[in-house]
Image: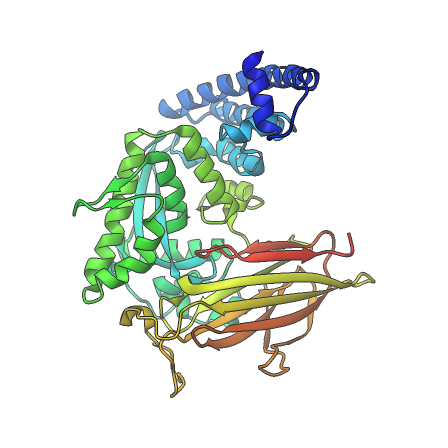
Amino acid sequence: MDQLLSIVRLFMGRRRVTKVVAITFAILTTLCLILSLTFALPAYLSTKALKSDISQGRFDQKTRDDAKRSAASLHRLFSLVGMPGIHQIARATHLNVSDVKEELSALVADSPTLSGADHQKRYLIAFQNLAEARGTGGLMGAYAVVVIDKGKWRVEKTGSDSSLHIFDQIPISMPSEYLDLYGTDPADWRNSNLSPHFPYAAQIWIALWKKQFGEQLDGVITLDPVAVSYLLQATGPITLKSGEEVTSANVVKKTLVDEYKIYSADNAARKAYLVDIMNRTAEKIAEKKFSYLSLLSGVQKSILEHRLLLYSANPEVEKSLASTLLAGSLDTGAQNQYRAVIENVDGSKLDYYLKRSVKITSTSCSLPPKTEVRLTLANTVGRGQKLPAYVLTRADIGKPQDLLPGQHHFKLFIYGPKDSHLIDAYSPGHGAKTGKISVERMRPILVWDIDLPPGQSWTVVSHFAGGRGAITWYDQPLVSKSSVKIDDKCR
């Protein structure tokens, strides 16, 4: 009981807690733990049976039933862990994954197919470079092909984007609205994820892979340096071929800043450096010498921040994933969701230095409701800051004659909710113009072209009509998260 009292005082902070209150809370906590174990035992048994099925290569009705039972049991357990009291204990022990219970349950339910119980699966892992922004995060700078067979996995191939061909045409049919927005640029691997709708990028990557290598992939998984930092928190540091140590604390800076300085004159060596980090991280995870709870916590953060995405070429599995955060979908069912996407235009690596601030405000609750989205983008590169030429690259056509070092050219896409429409938009200090108006997957888009000098900021204000329910925001996964404030007066 004394240990429970200590735990209670820890969770309730430094406030003075009477012994009666502490004992009462401790008893309730004990009951919650017993209840948790009651839910945990069925989840453990069903998951153990499922693991046995997969490792034996079984893919029959029993396997499917075990998968469904495991998913249902884990879903109940995750929901329970999110309850008050249990939530605090779970958070302290990295056990609270209730925020991603739908995602984890979907993975378990589809695990026989995803993990190759029927036949081995081959997945492309796209490592996104957040220094050059794309719709789903960043440009694919490095990749791996992972083979999963009966639950066991191995890395088959790794490489950088320099080994991938550039084609003239997208090898699959795309909607006309997609072509109006992005043209044929996505036929280049580096531009295949211009749209924030991840299934589009995954389908194009799978088709490009088959066209170049003649091999059929079963799906695509994305990671970025921030997600890798979360994984390294669980595994500990990795050691590269050179003997350099990479940790959770320095991997983001090393891959998005330092490498451009160290390998400024050798781009091939820089790409090899990225591949080495990816290989060593995979090896570290394969060793299984890590905290599973910490790894689960890292996976949870990666999912919540849209850094870990999964696409399956199996239509049934993809349908199951579609409603989860893992799908990375530009959701056509999002009734009142807003989002903004940065698309790098100049080929620079300056998106590392871009900060985003968002304020969304209800301006009218009468039907249709009206909403203002105020987005400010700040270029934090300092005047005179010395950056490698590769980082400052301006490969865009028609760049200004009075270009300043660190001046960044990009497009801003602001998406309104499904079936809403853009009323107007303007940029304070840059004229009252509407910008380009387009649409993607039933979502209206304001497209604004921005050329932002170092040390300056740019604000775009847009007004939308429509949307139902609570206002939400979907953040594009870049180096730092957007600062978001929502003032929803209609709820």
